[in-house]
Length: 117
Image 1 (cartoon, helix red, strand yellow):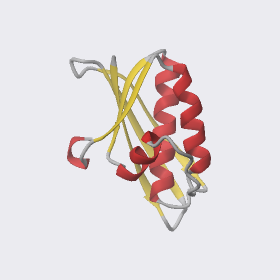
Image 2: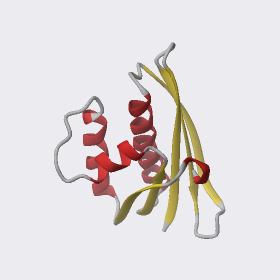
Image 3: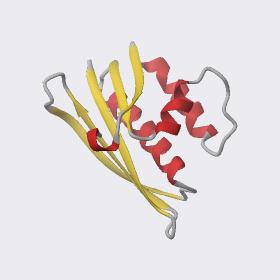
Image 4: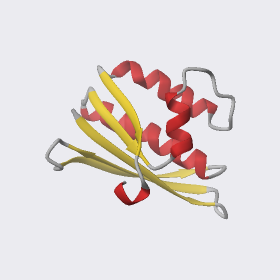
């Protein structure tokens, strides 16, 4: 079981974001980390959703199959945990996250406060 934390910064002027991802083991040791620059990002919610998606991709690519995903984006975490279709601006990203769920034996998404992320 590993913990994957994600966060994003967003520039409304440039319509870009940067995702930060870190994967930790149960003892808090860093197992993997990544940062990604994203273009054509409409808003902060989209930036956070993209960061969450990239966190799952990193965990999958590194080979982890039991994952707790944590982020400080309450709206994104709430929408991922819903069981019905969401037709918001981040719908396509949410659909990809739902598809990525199949690659994990255990996967949970949890909201944590910004100070803990």
